[in-house]
Image 1 (cartoon, rainbow, N blue to C red):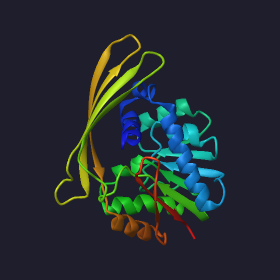
Image 2 (image 1 turned 90 degrees about the vertical axis):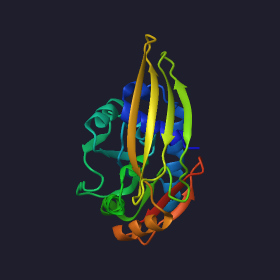
Image 3 (image 1 turned 180 degrees about the horizontal axis):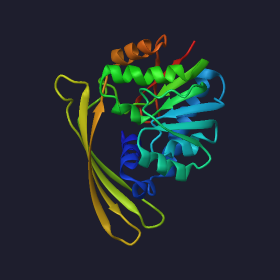
Length: 245
């Protein structure tokens, strides 16, 4: 099931109304999974954590309980949303492919924002950013929505209800990969109910990258890693973990 990841992507791109109705347990569970995998790689919980593509700050809201975090995102509106959720954290505007902070961290985390990398060069560039920001012995955790071997075009629907009367219902339509590319389209249709009962309809189309396991490994090696180990998260999706040795 992609629901935990799909919902987060929709939240990041649709604003505070949708963010208000996400089930906190989903994000908390994902945070526990991420910290558990990083703890296994490092032998300890990371003291410092850089999140690339941090979006609206929903992951950081839970991850910051375990580590001192720095958040990087390209979109000003997402950074603004995250600053409201996480006023205690450092926020930096930057592209995960090119940003350079001049310092290193125990761990780097990239969630579904990695899906916006459309080419192998984009993917390698993002992983290089992770590499240069890691201390020796540090680890990067990347949690894409899918790899080529697991990607299946589909239609999904669902929704969430907030305690203050806000609610959303969504439909996600994923299309076959674009011929001759490593990209595919997803259409999001969302009905967003405000506390006063009015309902807004929102449509978003996103172009995402999808890569084979071999392409992922090649990108990690181009970035400087020896390779990555593959794991399954609680939703049976492929996640990648690599250390800087």
